[in-house]
Image 1 (cartoon, rainbow, N blue to C red):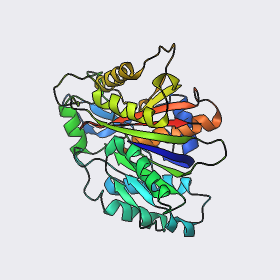
Image 2: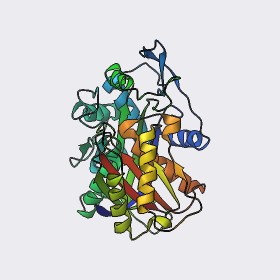
Image 3: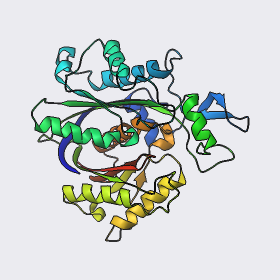
Image 4: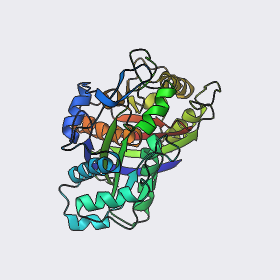
Length: 338
């Protein structure tokens, strides 16, 4: 639980529907999707469909993650001289440690590879945030702490993740969690890289994060226990309390939901546990319907989409709730305002 004072000042994004933040956000706004056949076959003999990022060469593994992250970071920092990058901490969001098929090298080699591709170094205060889809909120809290301690003027939060490896896909396929012609209760795997530059709030119109909250859901996806969304409700309540807001004051929500009924049910239950006044309309955005399940990159995609919507004037209001969930029970929420 933490009260923050952060502004999103620049963004960069690489997805299957766009290799820059403007193109990807435009595609997501138009609800464009771009799934294609992978190299993998499911147990029914059908090609597994996924949202693959089209790059110049067929890179795989850490090489592709590094390039997606580097592209997003370069876009995000394009107006800042490289000499100044060494003063900016990089909080790199990656898959959680218990993610099936997690790549070796995420906690050390990926950061090195990204710096080599960019030809630049970041601040010694940089770190790896290995919390999967909840990484965005964890990184926001860490970035605010760095700024409050006056260790820097800006913090760069970046993410890179991909579910398009057989060690990962095979586990989800065996668990019937992939979206197929025979299974509507599943997600389509994807990959992405993203980056946002955070700084102290200024006297101008900008998207600000005012608080984050965290919770643990005991009835997580594979627990077998009845879901009551207590962990998500706790995260939302903490974020709202620190922001000095009520749920009914939020104009809309954005989430990392990628298609599974469990997470839609959780969002609905958490809403019923935290809403105390009736609202006629309370929309929920889920960019993953266009980009697929992108793991640790999902939260950064949410931030980039929010920033573009608020800056261009098509957001559904100025008070926004974001929330995300990990399969292991970790829950996080954040309140944003324009």
